[in-house]
Amino acid sequence: MKVETTASRRSFLKTAAVTTAAATAVPLSRSAHAAGDDTLRVGLVGCGGRGTGAAVNAMNADKGARLVALADVFPEKIPGTLGRLKSAKPDQVDVSDDHQFSGFDAYKRLIDTVDVVLLATPSHFHPIHLKAAVEADKHVFVEKPHGVDPVQVRMVRDACELAKQKSLSVVSGLCWRYHQGVQETIKRIHDGAIGDVHTVQETYMTGFSWHRNRSPEDTEMRYQLRNWYNFHWLSGDLPGLTLVHSMDKGSWVLGDVPPTCCWSMGGRQVRTDPKYGDVYDHHAIVFEYPSGVRMYSFVRQQTGCFDSVDDLVQGTKGRADVKRNRIEGENPWRYSGRAQNFYNAEHAALFGAIRKGEPINNGHYMVISTMLAVMARMSSYTGKKITWDKAMASDHGLAPERYAWDATPPTTPGPDGRYPIATPGVTTLS
Image 1 (cartoon, rainbow, N blue to C red):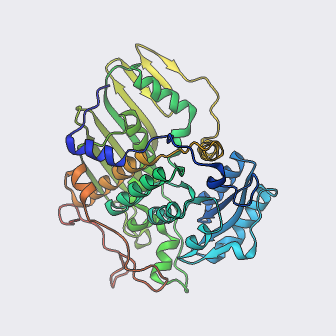
Image 2 (image 1 turned 30 degrees about the horizontal axis):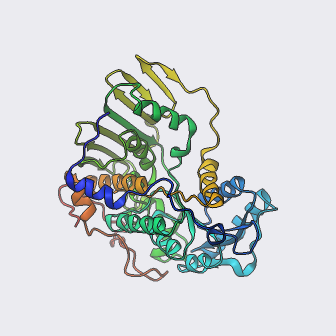
Image 3 (image 1 turned 45 degrees about the vertical axis):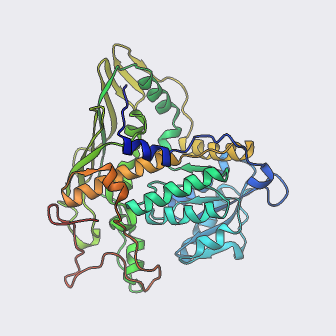
């Protein structure tokens, strides 16, 4: 499979690339063990379902990991999460009252108390919290996507580069990278099992997601955070929320190099009620690569329709079904080995790297795959073809002026209660 890059894209790769395992080992006494024993103190930021799962995965991965701190913007979420985690891992959970932090600055207070930080908040906050954790010399697991706009993608790029310089480990929640069957399938693609790759098709088409009704105590900021899937400044819309997993696999197949450009179409056809915020319910994106390869990506949340979550790669000698770990054509093959829980595996990689003093850093593909999702949304919203270079240099940002319950979110409803929806051909982005 041939991979070519333009000069500007080579410059990006030189700036953003982070080795999977840094050559410089970090002293074990610095990387952890602040308590002077084999304990790794772990803190969880984001006490939702994914965060609870990530904490269990971390403790599954390392018997010396101790969950000692929890943080969430909503204080009422902490007790239930703590109870579930104590029930699941009674010998590895010890969170005192003064290590339960809430509010928009909760992550800062948690970071000061731990060795390893798990980030599982609404997507908008991942880059902010990652930057703070790395600056404080902490190892980090951070859920996908790694940002919702170009400003945040650059923030992640810089944070991961700083982590590399500090010999800190950063592991991504793009979990398919740690699935053994997918690893072996993509290795065979890279080894030429299906010949030269010419087309990649990625789909993530499912039914509706959840929504929470507005409560009397909700400010607009509180309501949106409680329904963060439905607001693009918090979730990145469907390309960032779900499709990023699929596009990440496609990017991996293609060598994790940036595309030259993408063009897209999308809209809001079924989920039109104001309760669904300002996100679209479907997108179709084409990424063009300098080698001539194209990646076609489709995402939809419309109930009662054909569903598909698949990764198909077509080559000159056959076809690979990446998710199902099989190859058809001149070199038929199917993975028959045992695949461990990939959620546990990503944490095993993180904690193993810390224990060995051999840092792991997923920053390179974190940046590329997240930027694919950001580009896709930008193209869908504007109806324009967007180049990689223009997207990476864009000042388009989605942050509010401040983070507080009485602050104004980046998007607010009009007099009719409806949120403004991007209109292709009319909406413009910097």
